[in-house]
Length: 119
Image (cartoon, rainbow, N blue to C red; front, side):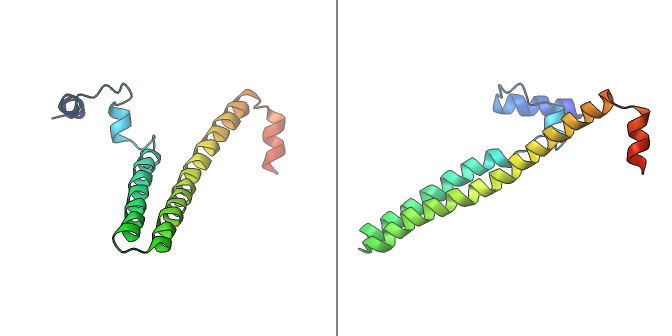
């Protein structure tokens, strides 16, 4: 089987309606998947901390420890996930800056600038 047949079988198996899913998306690392997974990971962490906090409050009878788990855990998981997302946004912004500067370099590529930057 070649890559196109594999991709077609994956699309049929999952009934994907995503137009973006092609060979370039599947087999190259041009698009980041991790930022999308971070959102799912955040919701799992949030559910876990709230469940732990409510368990401490109602099952063990320790209200303050349960409150710390709910508030502190929710806040900590939010901050940790935002830090990871910030790294990916910095990467996206740097790529945009790189694209813009490479476009401007090709537009204003004079021999004077080439000679000036060699020294």
